[in-house]
Amino acid sequence: MDVERYLDRIAGRVRDWRGSMGMTLQQVAARSGVAASTIQKVESQQMVPTIAVLFKIARGLGHSPVDLLDDSFGMGDVIHRPDPKGELDSGNPVHLTGEMLDAQFSTWRVVHAPGQGLVAPGLGPRGEVLILCQRGQLEATVGEQVYMLLPGESLHCKTRKGFGWRAVGHEPAEFTVIGSETTDIDRLLDGLGEGASSRQGSLQEPERGLRAGVPASPGSVTRGGPFQTP
Image (tube, rainbow, N blue to C red; front, side, top):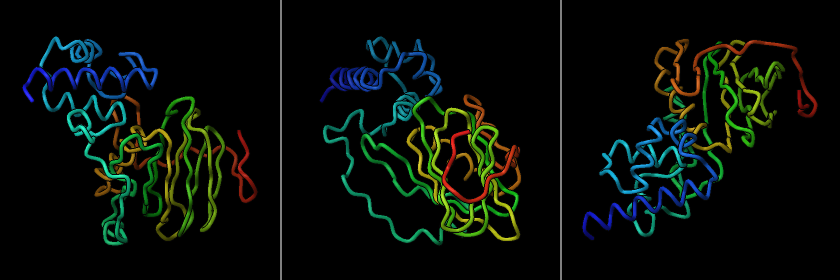
């Protein structure tokens, strides 16, 4: 396949993905970190994009860069992972869902030291997140409401008001996070992994204000019982 046909395929797929998601150029720009004018030029084949630009655009649209060129998208229908205990012991979040075409959710296993946490702003009107505590104690926040989670307890909420969590007590907290806004959730947890060595440090994600290692600000605390919308 010659270069022109590759560029035509890339342009068509970017247009199709953006159209299927109902997103404007500006919205894709905000998610990918690529200027709207550059995305428009890629879609209309007015430029030859760099690998870095293609990577950012693809991830911003919830795809792997491989999807732009591979007829089969290079994605399997099944992803099997071994026990991630070794990775968890390193203190980094472990991405369980991996790369899959059109994945509808993203799943991570996380271990936090006491006091370590994360605060995120709203991730979109349709976003949802499920947090399942497996060990230790976790303080989860939704907007101004605070919920205490013990092993076996979970919290499922919309993300439009912002959410967060913090390990409390005297032992590390181990928990699973499942999010529907796959690109934003992955960026959030990837950033947390990069800042894991400092444990209490803060990592600022420039476009969406995601902060890692920051204790959640408590409002009123709820223990036990079903989740209640604040």
